[in-house]
Image 1: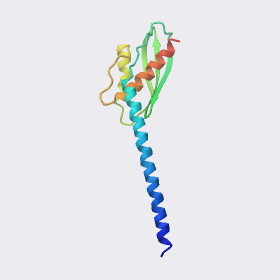
Image 2: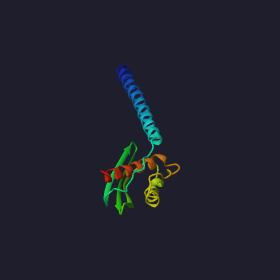
Image 3: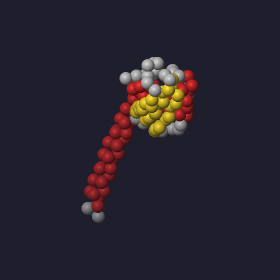
Image 4: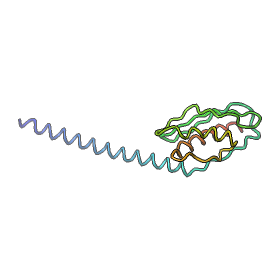
Length: 137
């Protein structure tokens, strides 16, 4: 019976150390994600002049963990004729997926973010911005 007590105490100590370092790592991870998302929300989206862009299909993407977006932007006659959201990874839902239609309708990136989906809205807009910037090269 005496041998079981030290094994139990050592096992308990190892479990406590693992839990402590696990919680510390998770707290650091969550803090980093929060800082990245706050920086994203504060970053302005630049409108892109497509008057000189050649007709074609342009691919753009943007990623800020935990949100990722990839788009396929079609330009015809110096206008955005279509935006296809080919990939949208998010944690909460799909309400921001109306952003591409709003951009096509208004022909500008200066559209309002979807309330409650600000981060996804910004990531999608950044992906569109990247696609349009590649059209102007």
